[in-house]
Length: 222
Image 1: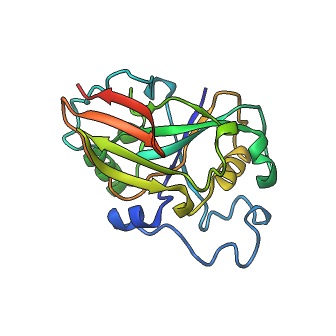
Image 2: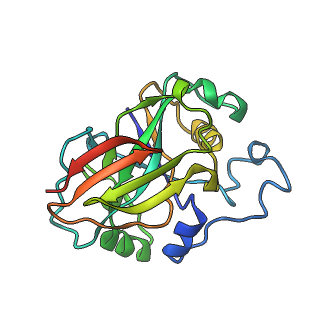
């Protein structure tokens, strides 16, 4: 199983972290898939997590000792149901079989140091337990993946909200783009990016993730 994640896929989150990676001029000149893969202008920011980073539903998240600023990033997560490579955007719906809400835990202080040194994010993003995932909802129960609301409650208070319509790169583009570089296999998952509102977690925090009004994720921080 492979775990992919997308960085900077919501404009307001980009502003929140004082970054702007989106080039609004792309796609007007040429359809996304007609540009060469070597042209990374405006492309999705893709990174991966280790399989040991997957936090099973209900399992506690253990706060790493090496970070003083571990933050939640609540995201829509999609699951691949069929093997495929170089998937056209128009056929992506045949390859995604379920969605849920997940959290991409980030050692923000460590990520900041890595970024300043021009180093990869792996140590800040891919550590054990850093990919929390909720209960999967079959795509047959989803009307429109680009019209889903999700939110995170921290100790009973809503701290982050997202609407998939606000994505810079929609799900179809993300799946298609990743499949140009990697063979997608059954069970692979993709974290599609976080909206604004990220924040820190602490020991004894209680987290609950919702897709619409449906609770799909609940666990504690230890």
